[in-house]
Length: 217
Image (tube, rainbow, N blue to C red):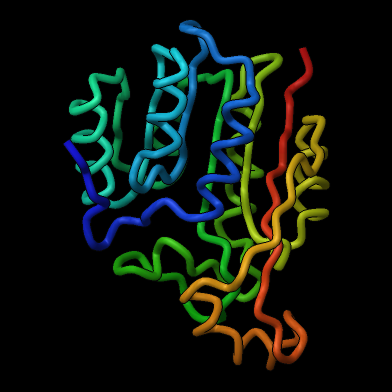
């Protein structure tokens, strides 16, 4: 059965696939406890479960995303626990070996929105409104030796992410980079990005990065 991502749910894109490649390089066994933060379509949670992880949790604030992920997991017969809530709040009392996150990271000024399509990408004037929350809240949820994999645009400042995670006691590095053409959202936002000096005039490509941060044993 072919399952299409329903309207209103973030569909897998280049950032999803880049993060998935990083996830699949990790040592995943049946005992690995995995968390997918902001799961969207559930692609990353299902990838982890498909690798054999028997303890996979997926969280999203969107009821549509929660329903879509739950249904996909059941159709594929994969053991994924799906929770609705704001980022790491629903799992604050849990600990994980691997946390993956593909948060909103497109810079755009304005107040934070809590519903509609923009929730999946709009992330404040510097694109770090959600990234910084993950950098703050994810490290305490990692078991010794646990790994956080976080993808975002280079427009958000990968060095800042590495510094924040290092400050939380993790060994953090940029593990992957990939340059891709602007998608529909960045094409639409390009004039604002140019006006605020975030991209040069006429820019049509962005660099995606995956940050890998490990908690020392």
